[in-house]
Length: 131
Image (cartoon, rainbow, N blue to C red):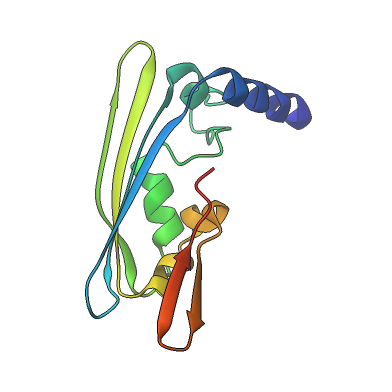
């Protein structure tokens, strides 16, 4: 059953457009914020959700998804979250504040983005996979 759901999710992801935008603002001390905004089809967001079941979507779609992922990570927190939907789409916008790029890289919900901070002499580089 789980394999069937994963195949359906994969098919829906390929068939539906996911529009993702992310922005990072860094301060001189290395702290900052990451804003992630995306739209997914409502059908995909609701897939697998029955009652209290978690959605079968590989993206966080609820405030609790972001809060749970950031809990226990010192230096990272959910600063704001909004979710709107119509008959066709669900729009998500989350702002995550972080004390350092290393703290940002430890936040569970962002692990799929494979965030890495690399240091070469005095130069620090942030790398992340968006899709």
